[in-house]
Image (cartoon, rainbow over all chains, first blue to last red; front, side, top):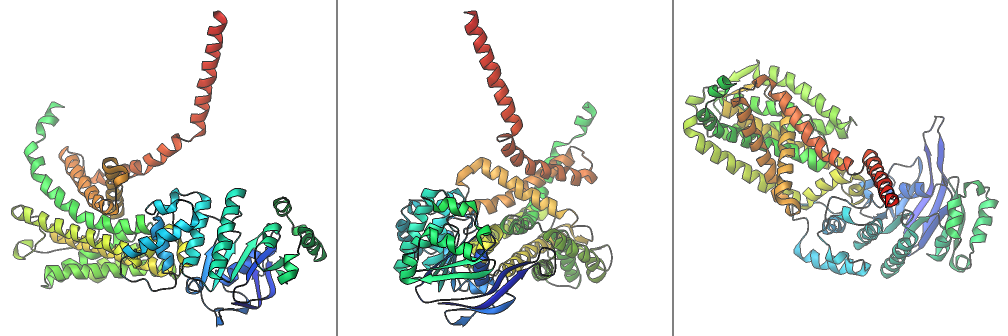
Length: 267
Length: 330
């Protein structure tokens, strides 16, 4: 469960580049909610992710994960509650380490790092089974360096790492935006499967309106650092891309809609 | 030329080789320290020029006070750990860039070594009267080399073990991808400080051993140490890769750091034997390191460069033209 209470964040305050990235945003996700976040460039969708992940402190407001106030906790301390997948496939994994070493590190997320061996024998079998679920053949390349994998394979691996130790909240920050359409569809499919199998509370940022509608049970739209639209249940199921575009125009955020959003959503 | 060749004495070369191996082993421990920061943490740590001399100074002063040589070495190690902590705090708490943080510690250590530890530019022990296990005395040379070899082997095994543990994996990940590492709940600042402390501990231990070996500590003994350490790391990597290629595992990587150091000192002995002026050795070392760093980069570049592409295309165009002419003449 996630509770965001009235958070704001301004970057470069007092300078010519001042940018109000989050403007009194509140949001409550119930257990098992899969919420997609949509918005144009600079709408604040990645910013809200980073605020929850604790990349920097917010200016005001508070953030609760699973009922625990994490507003004052820094990034690595919040990691025990969060699984994260980033937009850039290079960021989620350590390129110069083996696939199993990456998995072993993720399996210890939020735990104290001891002087016990980094990957135990029993873990190998467990990870082989986990990798098999991805259906990418990675189970046969467990000791290969992650740097040898393709972007899609790395994103799938990051997704596995983010969820293998059940997080209170899964944060997906445009995690398919850097992939080609076919790979993106595969990673999204894996996302849906993992989220529903583990009943994970999830927030997924996307610029693709169709993806935002198809996936999850809830949708919020951001514009200029504010939440301008919030639908769930039946209403969300019946949503069309045209409805979202109209919403954008109503909110005066139409100029934030990039060609990319429109093009990617027409299929 | 003949005069020069005649003046070279092959027996002298043979006699100085054991000394080269012993020094190579001592500096190998230093190079293992450099390996932690340079290769694992991706942190160019210049503290080592200072902490190496600190290790030597601490060891000699404790020996002068009548301490046991091994305990003195342990305190050299601790002194190095403290030096690494200072650089780590400069970098992580005060946000000073890595190279500058190292230089600040290094330069302050110069004063500390001179004023607070040694008290003057150099201090010597009477090596003959002490029961040193690491000594340049020719009679004990085989024993010294054996002891140093065992020390290096033990340190390589300990490093292999540590870097394979959960803690060591976190340290390696910090150097590769700090953002990912934080997302796994690891405090990357702590990891950097731990890595710097361990690295400088080894460097100072090596400095202490060298001071025992040569029987004195000198305020300038660490000058350019980083370059020698890098030379050992890089020479070891290049040679290891050319022998083992893809089969190069982590244990071999660590072992070849020490091997690189030994090779460096054997070459050093050879170059000195060829009557190369000793004062120019640092210049030679710097050139060697620059070449070894540049070659892999230039190799990658030449395989993938605009100039090469232009030449390839020009050649193809010329070939076509020639082909056309031949067809025409037929």
